[in-house]
Length: 304
Image (cartoon, rainbow, N blue to C red):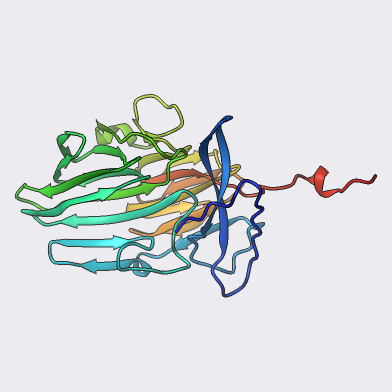
């Protein structure tokens, strides 16, 4: 649950070795002065509650440590606390609240259900899903497609696999920078060749071209590196980076990832992503409020 401090309130963060760690993320809110960045206190979605925020960290979480649920019609890995799965040390990562790795069987799906105040992005890896929502959209999301719903003030939707084969997709939820938005929808198709040996932005709230848009200072990239190729991601200062490996093996600044591993990255230096034997992955860049508060000049104090 997100708790918003009052405008005069200062949130203090106390790091403890075995207790959940609180963190501030920056959320834009409407005010009489226009849009303002307001710190929102949340429970840190971190695997290690003992982390010191001053240190640079690449935290690789192995595939075997993901939470798995099998409902018969749905087989899913929940990378963050979701539904029946709750871990107070694994709520979210910055503004990234949900990353589900889902497989839905033919003739089944998610019945109509509600959402609000969330950017919901679906990336289809294999197969197709039929989507219907309260905004009047009825679409089919196919392999290579990226879909976004901005839930805003509230919407309902359903997703069903009416095809003859299972559908495999990622569903990603990101907190919006603004509350009270009207619900909207966006969808685009991409060819896998577009992210071969490069990072291709497919969904973004950073005014990029040829992407599915959403309402957060964040970007979702796809990448598929052939053996011996590497790319550099240098937008790390003041940011947090989440990586999920779809297949293959990937080195992140020398740290090794295998298939279905994830990396939660807090570094100030560029990230070098290298594939010795080939690797396909998702990279999500989200804002960090690391260092939010008084600057060095203020902390130096003053005299009267």
